[in-house]
Length: 246
Length: 138
Image (cartoon, rainbow over all chains, first blue to last red):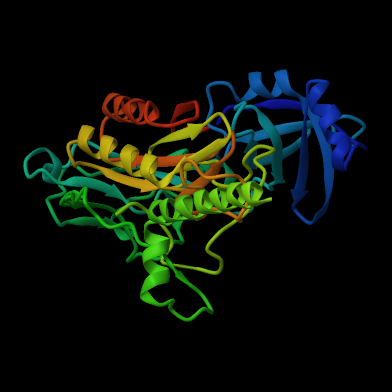
């Protein structure tokens, strides 16, 4: 495990003023855990980018060098959560969980399939991933980045469950063993919708069904409009006649 | 039949506003690839059905498709050559209010080039700009 040092400092800005921090090039974060109260911190966005470059955010352990802290060694922390902006793809906020390197912790790890299943290559099936992460318990040093499962022997209709995942040494999987992770199924045949399908209105809650006339009117609004036109014309015609009489 | 609710409380709805960015349905939750909107607007149930068919055909009925949004807003239309007034028009369709950042569709079970092409075909059928998303393992 690489020793990643990240400089951070405590922040006073909270609530809406955090947006100003982001504009100034900082990332707001919080550190909690190990029986200590949660502390709001901030770090330079460029520094964070450099530190995590080439690593996956998930379960990355960094040494947080907090200014004005008693301990000069820094606090070992696990990146618990990273909030991203959905449009800009930039980091909005980071959660750090302080960890003790001697205590076991619980976290979630990604599961990845390796190889092309036989059911897909030979039988025309589709590989379905029903569980993307499993919960594990281990020492912070032993957290795997990803759990790789060999899916190349999967036939059509077969599946791999959590019990088939072989964790590395010192790692216990806590997720229920019977839950399916990968399966190969036949692709669902999409039903082609007929073009002449009738467009009906949905049922209105709390209202009794209208008589047939109302339904017809609702189904074909154009017809109703067409009926209105002659009426309008009649009215105009009547108005002109009345003026002539005067 | 295009997507529409089975039961509704009211037949007609007001236009509503589309301000702001999407705060929900903004991340890939089911599939490996997705189509994210970059603009705000109304997507009709017919357009949604059109993109579903286009993607399913390009994927040659392999893989899986998830439509993340449902057209639950009724829109009304007045008949042609009708004078203004005389009340609101009759329901004519159903739309989704999309905002920048919404994930419209997710797919899985096909290679990335196929997924990209399929969602590119779908984007031509939409009234808003979109982009192709791949699930990232940060």
